[in-house]
Image 1 (cartoon, rainbow, N blue to C red):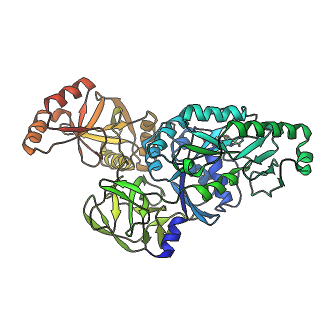
Image 2 (cartoon, rainbow, N blue to C red):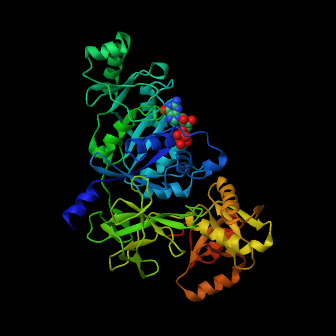
Length: 529
Ligand code: GDP
């Protein structure tokens, strides 16, 4: 690997934001794009209807700000690094899409509404990041409102999320009296000015806690209070420790207001300085380091109709190792084919452009004509590579979907299969009838599917209840026994969107009995067992 490639890889910082709805993810994303100079001015993202919520919040930014397509990934240079920010979908439900996006990052920013504290979705998302010990940075947002006691907030994060807090900045007041933050590590204060949310602010900074200019700026009372609090917090909390941060055991904490565009840059400074460069990814037989000599990557997301005019489908690949160059030949291991990637998209500074090159840690978009699936590995390794831990979970909720206009069967099937490729729902086609069964992890996904079928495929569909409670992917090494199983259980077998055989059970008792009856058949609750 050339020194230049190595250097490029070391500069990559790939992260996503995790937060509870309304904590400020969209607003902070916008401010990151401002700080990263992807956009020149920011305006508050206005109220979002249900429809918008179901899609990506980034699409909202896009619509309202008129910037070019940003969905899913965004890249910008900052502080000598190349930052990749991945969007986690704004679904009301906890979705698989979010889960898989988190497999494609090397660190995460947790945004907490400091008027509220740790909320339920944040707890779930932290559980997911924990599976890979992802390093976490924390931003306490909405300091321009009356927040909870900051020490209590840190305690709550430590107790509930089981991660140590190392405050890097500390708030000087909040709400009407929000004056700024004190940088504990750097020993200086940065002053807040309201009404500056839409542009990069000029920084007013005072070095040292007993700086007379600082005392004058915030008043003696606030100054004394700040000193007392700093003493308390330094006694009660942890110092930043890079090792513990990289192991996901300690989080640096920043205070600010995304809306007021204050404090976001402090966080980004730390992210670029301390968050890890691209990390290795596990495979079936070991792992692939970012600096491995060959190119490799995996698909973590597929999105249909990014551009309604073109009806395109884009598969998003996290590059795991090496360098991509335009026109490169790579192996698509699942189907054992060599393909040439000519027109991969990159997302530098908000432009969807054709990439000449990209490096480990980057995200590239590949046009998909139905041959790419979530979890697919591509590489220039001769031996097949299979990255692990990018699951399709068995759905827990099922409904039969029916057309209002029976003549549109072909479009319905096409839409469902494309939407299931995206991984947000799954579709099952029973072997014995022409039913179409939609399976999902969360209820909202059903509404999203019907809306998208209508808007993107011009198909009106409705749901009916169906007697299915759970699904398992099935496999068997003994062809004869498998045939017998298939014959006897035909009434419970279906094909998923990618033609994999699944057993659909009306209830758990039925599933358990069937498993007992056919011990040679293996039943899997994720597709990529
Ligand atoms: P998301 O659901 O996490 O993407 O949250 P949004 O970014 O859409 O923010 C939810 C609401 O909180 C919006 O009305 C924002 O304007 C508001 N908001 C976000 N950040 C701040 C902040 O720092 N201060 C205040 N007062 N409001 C904020």
